[in-house]
Image: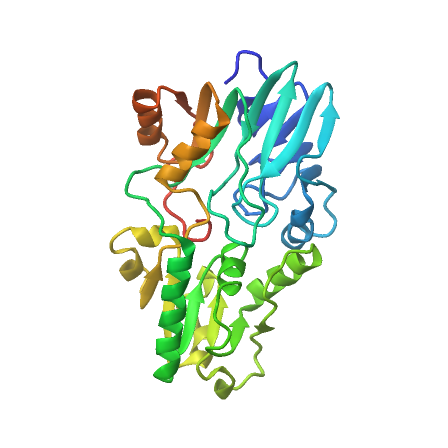
Length: 338
């Protein structure tokens, strides 16, 4: 990737040979810096992990208490073999980080996943000046343009209120780490009771233990009667769609919160009653704004529409862009990390 080899792509993932560390490796390595705790970035099997402090308990929840885990704060610098390593807010989910590497005046930043809108839950994205920027581009097509989240949550709360007035419960499917907590924190509690699927409730407790401000709601349990949920909103992971677990909430209406709801027919294909376009990734304009703010001379693109977005950067923004063939190249859309 880089002439100076501050960072390079290997069969194990992005590697900094001078510090002998990997960033979000997809195969077991000795030392891994993890941008955030989603499963496509934080994988089991590393001998040691370095993450932001807000990811500590979630990493243990997902990978086990026995993992070797070191945490640091944003803008705190570690030095390994002369390489300065620091984490900076990515705005994707709580604890999500951009990784900054500096050696002899050269700076490379690996974005991880990010979004520019301040969601009120995660530390807001901060652009980091660098010479080279490794950027995701999950939604790197012009068709992706997000509405302000205030407008989206007004729609969600209106949908819930209408269901409650018609004696129906409301079930929202949202990824258990990040999206679910973002939705919970913006619900109008005056409408009715709010409950969480066990997977989301467990994640909430881990985040609360790390000082993240999450609405702490009751966990759905087998002992609860149907009457407990009259007019309630239940938030659940996408894995619960179509499962027998939903029967206890009948009659109910379902909705999906996802950036992929921007695509015509996505809600219908997943058999949901409603779809709300809410993503934890940057949209087309957000990607462009973030990349230009870094001042990077070279951009490396991963995850998503790398070819189209790279061509735009080179032809319209005059920024040198290179696609990286990662483990995730060409993967289908996945509402569990959007």
